[in-house]
Length: 253
Image (cartoon, rainbow, N blue to C red; front, side, top):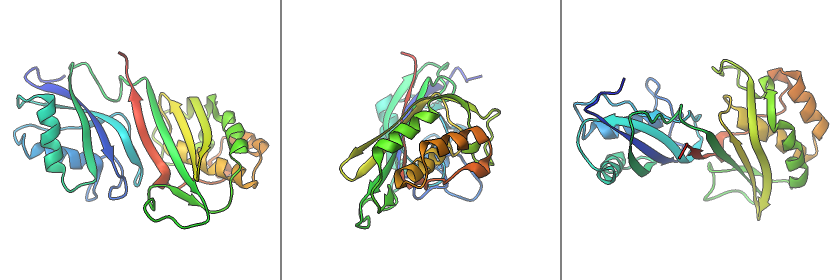
């Protein structure tokens, strides 16, 4: 139960995932959650700070609009809180892009209605410079139309055992994917995935599989077979974390 003397704040968080071993706090390694908690403890030393995110991201995965909540007892406006956290985050690759005072009933994870991710492939011969670590570099041409068509195999409610990590802690492999689309903008091939929630490694498993379709190594029927197999060893490829971005979370108005 939330302490009545504390104010709950909703934080919208942006981060470069490269320096971190994921979102969730772990012993002896840098994580986004602990980095934000330490920044808040610097000006709220008497509070037990727990920053709870809307979802976990893996090592190397980035965020544009991760959402978290935190309770603090120190009276301050949301704008001042945002500024104070960002001051103490320097020089970390994390930024609080928005802070809002919310009801104690708001929960970043359990109130979420939809989570949106984008995965970026840079599809060109030339090596990456500025975007190294921020996208998956694929040198040979990809058939985006075939990839988008095959992606529709995943839309809807399915048993996604093939597309979940062995260490996935979800109680069920059954998930509903509301959208999975693929488009090309110049050299960038963008994958957009929307769902209430995802399994561990699910999106990266989708992207790796669709990359095989774009290569011509797999066809749509191979994707269907992999899905129906319900075995992790039926997966074609797991994409690297570099190109995955947590874009935003939708909540009730």
